[in-house]
Length: 139
Image 1 (tube, helix red, strand yellow):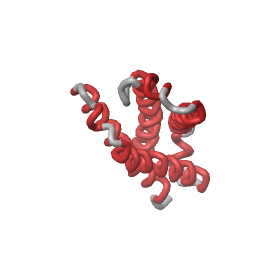
Image 2 (cartoon, helix red, strand yellow; image 1 turned 90 degrees about the vertical axis):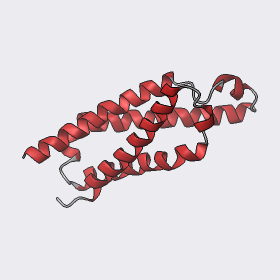
Image 3 (cartoon, one colour; image 1 turned 135 degrees about the horizontal axis):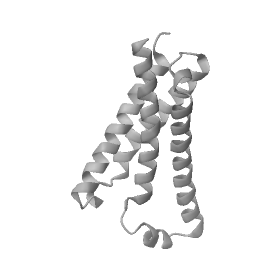
Image 4 (tube, one colour; image 1 turned 30 degrees about the horizontal axis):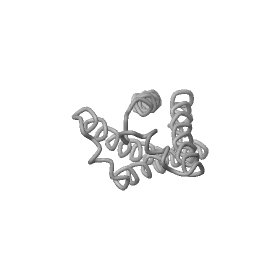
């Protein structure tokens, strides 16, 4: 019972942290001059870039809501819970793989940005492992 309560608390905490991440992403200037650089692209490319960011943000929000609102269900081991946890693990694992490929390190000119980026990578890895555990753990 205690372990189950700890898992529920952990999932709810992760859900809240999804929204912290989303808020920080909206306030973080990565890459620098984002709007000015987008203006140089053809309109269709700008729209794809903006749509991609909106999709990522919406996914983070939905996963955060699932974790906040359905934590007991997500740790239950039910097939749908495992599927949602597996999808969440794949999303964050994919982010963990893609972020270094983007090559943002040279644009991290302030210590706070470097720390934030490192924390984001840690968050991605932690979520991938934790939600992966929930998806694959025995009932």
